[in-house]
Length: 394
Image (cartoon, rainbow, N blue to C red; front, side, top):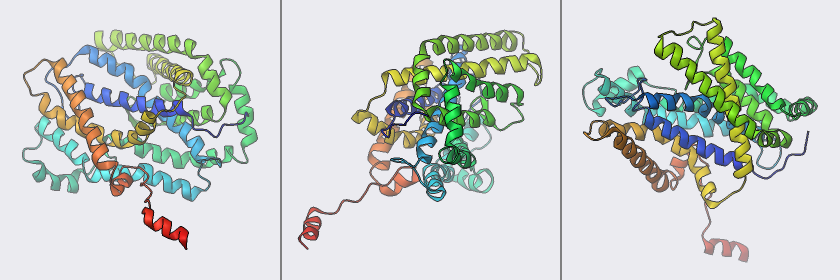
């Protein structure tokens, strides 16, 4: 296994920021697609549904791969690494679990309230609804923050094997990396993903954002493996121009199958049928190829740091925590306006982004209590200049 650089891998930071921005755009578009949601526009558009099918194929899978790569560095003993299980658990509780619980006890209630009043299942003010939420409908998953909850569980489940691979199991990891570093071998990591997508009953398994959680668990471990060796990251870079057309071509094939079978013929393949396994298998392989392409192009073009990246990387988690509540709050009013739907979407997109950034910049970022509640590290207190000089004088 090649020596790992201790420097931060900046392209993963860039990709994390860009992936969360994609989730933001995706959620603004859900006001206009066919699938039910908390708040909906009166008219839906087929092209939005195609965009959603495209985005969900790789969007959350990419985020779980990046999360797995981050776990590699978190478990390690090197610079910035977390040495013990207790420290690892503390970090994950503060970073992932606390924001979920805060959201569940605060602004997730607004999302559920908006769903009720737009679907005609509750009439009354938000304050009148709150007792019902806390007594009967408390969303412990934190609405859209299910990803943080699931990642918290994944981190605990995978910690023993990750820690072993970074310690006594380094020889095993080294041999595995030697195999994965062979030309084109990175595509072999798609095989477990294909099996987990094609052989697991999606409807009966825990799932969200278009994939079952077992699929996400494997991608988290796959991200750990890719991050564990510079040769594998370089391989994704070399393969980027092969992965891109493969991923897009397979994705187009999958969307065509959905259009022909589901939309035109109204036929939903039954679990266990060859069409079911073929469709999910194609989609899973498309997802992995798209992820490899994104990782490869990211390493080629985004492996640098700027002050904007430093700012965005710190803001990305609070932005994610706030974004859906703000989108729904803005969208609830905007979809009722008698203006073109494209203009509605642009208003929701721009106004929501502005509100989130204002809340982050002038509230969350500057108040230490809120920083902790939103999964950030508190700002270190700086002693007054006079006190420091007095201390030196003594």
